Image (cartoon, rainbow, N blue to C red; front, side, top):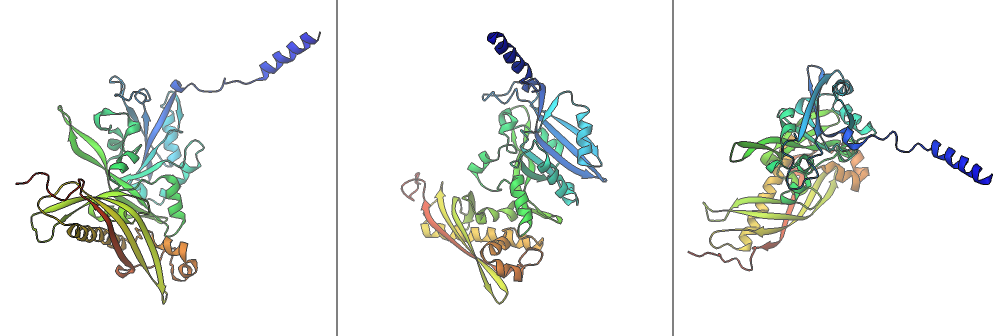
Length: 384
């Protein structure tokens, strides 16, 4: 009798267990990798990039018969309406948990609805704060259709994984939704969103190919879009950024009109000290660098190299700073430095969360600690 009761109880318990009946099999889902948002004629234009995971597991190369991705497009009075229009044309469940980036057009950033766009993605239960943010002036569809060099998987692309590019040169620092949210909520209530362009410097034996390139920043505040820092005007940001970075400078050697030198720089540290006097603030910026010389012509001394590096780095920083002032943007987030280190002074000086800045508010001190010739000597490896 006891055995029968035990059997009945066990069978009842098994029947009550839900198991995994409601779980969707991985092969029966579509995975969103990237989203593009545009805004035209009072409507949101949404682009969904659905990635083919059949290509992801193959490190040696993708399956040639399988398309790396497909792009869906829809319009709507709200972004959510556009998404639901796309859902009607999709024949499988959509999974948002692998979404890695979002691209804003210039018009989407100009719109007063750019902040609600960010808010919508943060509120979605399946998305994460690590989603990377970019902006562009190129057609979003063309950007999303670009495949990485050598036709690698899209998960290895610059947009999905910019940290690989960062190891080569830290020209533009990636910004995710978490950092974007923090920067907009805290002084100076502005953020530098990486700017991407379609690059045509590559080609195969059959035809030219395209790739994405990070070439600057789109400057956004809580009140909307303010403009761009691109190419040379954006170079100074990398030297003031607080994390260790890697970059290069090219300069003319002293007393040698036709000879230039390109130097690899590794930034060791940046220290910013706000100095308040008579309700005015200046910022002393102390930057320390190491230099690596990969190649040069003729005789050159470490003193010459140090002078050239210091001059060029200062020029980069001043150019970025002054271009930011023209757009009324605190590109180096100096207001935050005063807010963190002397909040009483910040409260007296700030206007709308920002400290008034002028060309004289920035004081630079650049130190080159080591100059590494790449070999054991500064002598030329091949002599005439």
